[in-house]
Image (cartoon, rainbow, N blue to C red; front, side, top):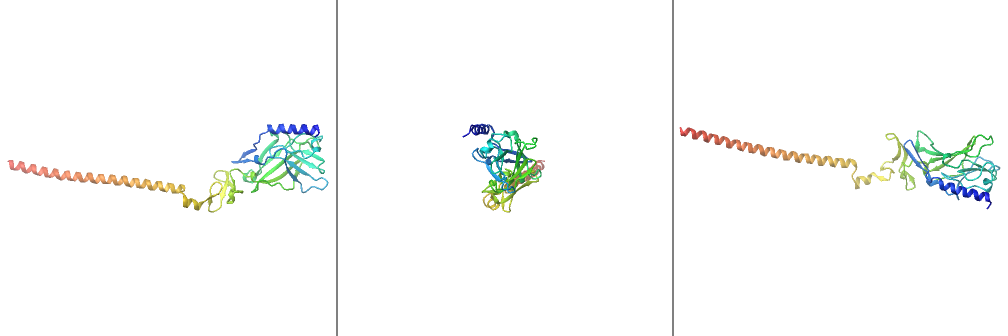
Length: 285
């Protein structure tokens, strides 16, 4: 192995250990984590530009929140740069190579694909790559993680280019907000869709009829048969309270009636006693 390539690999290994594995982003009430898509140095994502010609044969090699495996020995020996990079553009049947991003987290930026709808997805942009032929603009690459049902699908695709900035799409469930769970190999359990809640201004699963819960995996029929909902609990509480009030009212009514009966009895006894006393006074005269 040439000394230059060995030095580059050692340098890349040291950099990988110094960069955080987490690759998270939050905005507009939505949170994302694409850490699971990160590959080791021995593997990378490869996407061939379907627009290119046979002569150029543009292929894009990249990693997610990490450094891509160097596509070829020629890529390690380019005049423009050497060492690792998060993304490469390979052309001329592997003989040419451009780095599309710099080394370090400062060259990594996340943003929403749609500021008005965070459920559409999130993008990751690498900056600080090799300079273009003009010598002033640095190359960059943007990976658009579009919310989809699949774990991660990177087929050959049309790669957009604009002033040495390259953009490709990555269909993956990790482009979906974490507020919409991926359960049973499907977003929202396959029983709903991920959308924005206008009340909380946050993404959530909107469940199909008959389903509920944060992941739409709970059947309403099961709740009706095997449990008691919040409304049910509230109704039981109201019934218990009414029974308690009726019981207390009955006790009070009973005691009042008893007190009235005693008052009446004592009143009659008092009248009888007064009459007897008057009779005795009369006879004594």
